[in-house]
Length: 215
Image 1 (tube, one colour):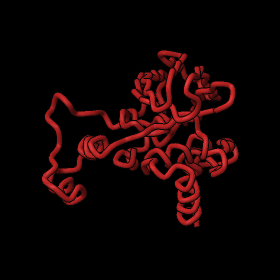
Image 2: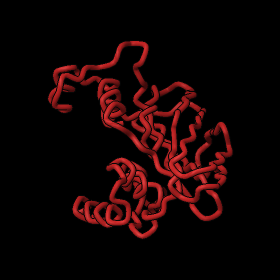
Image 3: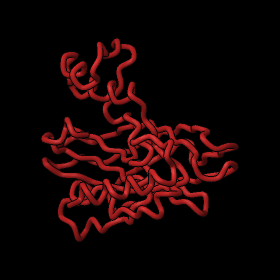
């Protein structure tokens, strides 16, 4: 039943923002969701995702992670889709970009920050993200990290200042940690807040080979 519930919530948000893209609406629903307790849910973020959606809060998310068609194609190419499959999905003669413009799957501009790392080895990974201001024209957001894991997480920059609506700002998140065992995961939460809006993103580092193509 989750699909029709989310579809209804997306339609509700769309009535307030008819020009928002599907990825913008999805971002709004994800970053404003109520957090759930990973200690009470065995699958943690892989079980409950971003949390329990709140359509009312999603109307005014503050910041959103938007993607366009080209971003989606580059992501599919980065996780191994061949050009034939890409053309079937895109419906035209679209092809994968040249080597110098390829992206890492973890750099897809998604509201969550997730990546696979090798088991048994310490890791250090960096995520790149861009957010768009849809809240208050002149606003400043500060980054905070919440985690129960032994992770070292650095956000650069730690402050994003906006002067207008639809303005975009980029940031990087570097996550370092000790070696993980087979089929395991660690997680944290990144929150951008201007005092009114709390834009929440999950950070998940895992060793589940089976979900390589999914994230």
